[in-house]
Length: 505
Ligand code: MLC
Ligand code: AMP
Image (tube, rainbow, N blue to C red; front, side, top):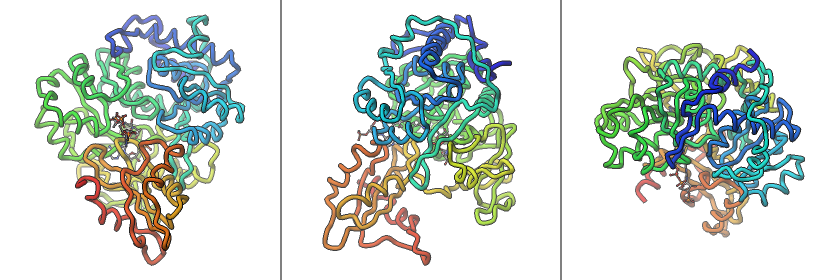
């Protein structure tokens, strides 16, 4: 085998006229058509000088061409580096510089802002828009429909995915071919994906969930995807009769439940609903079953590890839990202070080991050393316990992290911006309950003596610096922040104090 990930996900479908992508206008793209686009893109990338191991940063709207770019990277050994379309130019500068990306693909709209940034960093820029137009596809048009796949091993890097850090500096998680391949194989089998499956795909493709879990599993099984540009309730309901499975973050499911058109009849033919990326409230799962007769299958994963655990396909899907470790994944609960394994029922930090666990953080050996033990266990930063029957319950986080609508937001990044604003002495950013997003961002500010900040100006300070989804939904002023004996801000006290501040608005 020359390139295990390419061969298993893509190469085996060469020549197949089966539909791979169904688009919102009702047209389809066959496996073969998709692979031909990928091959053309592979020629463009290699002809522009990109070598195996080089990073290709991609910040583009979801489209078949954007997914083909991922396939082209796998085929050429170029490391795929997808970026959230909401990131600002300031955020992009960091990712391109830190990864030393050889090239960036962006929307035509962003070209003007990003090309000077890239020029300074020696990074080439091409454009790709949602409709497939732009310089990239223009160059692809004249290329051959076949590309001689570059040889790779399971240990070679396939992708670099940035996850924010608790210190405010994002870390690039290095994912190998073997990491992605092992997880795709396991999940396709565990969730019984087959060539007849049609996955309703409404997630973004710049994160693990939409890119690796949803797309890799479909590719592994040879199934099709209804490839919607984004989550849109009307489109989801319109397309559901054609689908067999749906993967989503909990917000997908709560929004569906809020819509009277989402009925037992609409879902009667569905084979499977899967949720992840954020906690699905047990009550939401129970309400979903009452409405549809389906119990959502909840699983647990993260950027660094792909998927770690899953509720069973057959057997009890226990609401409020994330199920059992996947085959090949070792999982233990440890004492955060000592790292010693705890016994069943005790709450501690969740550690995982297996072929799914990443290779480390890009050019950050100390961070890698702090989170990835030499015996292969990765310290997830999540807190959990295992119940009597072996189901994992996630009960909290040992890391300062907010998950809003499935997007991770690190408070430190926001506090740095708040603290730099005139009139702000100090700040603490916390997650508070939100009916739609699960959690949302609240900024708690202490004013400078005699110089209260203008809150509108403070909010305006975020515009160019951080993606919109990270901006606080609300700012509140307090005289001082609660601190413990060590002087550490007690965010749990603030979370308790302000737990109703958003939902009761
Ligand atoms: C959008 N907005 C958000 C937001 N999404 N704000 C907070 N949290 C979010 N998740 C903001 C926009 O900036 C905009 O602000 C307003 O909300 C409406 O934007 P929108 O584009 O209309 O939002 P919508 O389409 O409704 O998006 C909500 C969503 C989306 C939940 C459908 O966020 C989404 O697709 N989330 C999935 C994220 C995901 O894939 N996570 C997986 C990570 S991988 P304004 O003020 O300008 O109107 C991972 C590992 C694992 O975690 O285990 O899977
Ligand atoms: P990310 O860094 O975006 O990959 O997010 C990973 C984090 O999402 C995990 O560390 C968990 O905190 C959280 N997460 C993922 N799936 C679940 C789930 N099913 N329940 C609770 N939290 C989850």
